Length: 253
Ligand SMILES: Nc1ncnc2c1ncn2[C@@H]1O[C@H](COP(=O)(O)OP(=O)(O)OP(=O)(O)O)[C@@H](O)[C@H]1O
Image (cartoon, rainbow, N blue to C red; front, side, top):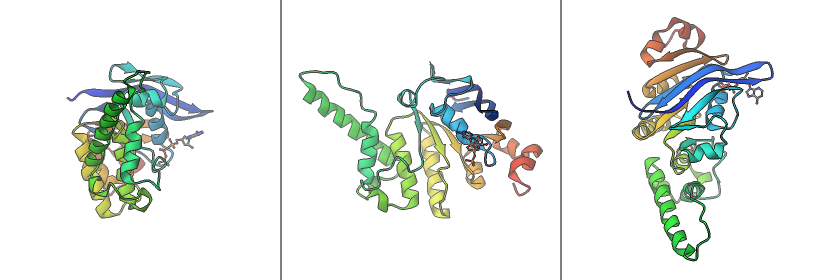
């Protein structure tokens, strides 16, 4: 069994009287993809928001590596090594692909304290930022597109760019919200290949609706309905689970 990098225990998030997430526990392991599926309104986005710190849980706890992050801010959680892609909203469309990734890497650069040799430190910091951005670009398969204007890139390339920007913040854990949304067959295949490549270095949680991609990618599958986990385990076992078939997968799967 590989290392657990993120562990959430008994998370509940209430909006008034509605428990959008109800007593949910999730582990994310290095080199494993944990897919979360469920019908609209199941609580998948809310769960993602709890793990990234974008929403505080009503109860429960979250640890990232050795650190308790239950009440930490998104910025603190990001600096502790959790990367979350925000669908397109973070892309600066008039800038090039490279400039976008460079900016994301820059956002993680250490603040420099005052120092008379600051120019030297800045040069070193710049080199580190550039290196991180180059690595992210390459890992996301965008090196050949570096000088494209982001707004002119294809839908699939923009989704790759979101992932590259997330990678540039140097995360160990990745939370990806519907990375295949709106993609054609060829783009989706490329994205599946990219996600499998990323798995070799990261722990990943994927919220996705594309059932074929889910079964191609998932090492672990959690099914949510109405805020609650109705099944969690090996994909083959989940596929065979009658209650999951009835609630979500349908008879075809
Ligand atoms: N900020 C909020 N205030 C009140 N209710 C909310 C809020 N965010 C989500 N909800 C409710 O919580 C429930 C879970 O929503 P959530 O968006 O997490 O589901 P989801 O599984 O991600 O759905 P989808 O697949 O459609 O994105 C829904 O009933 C939704 O209306």
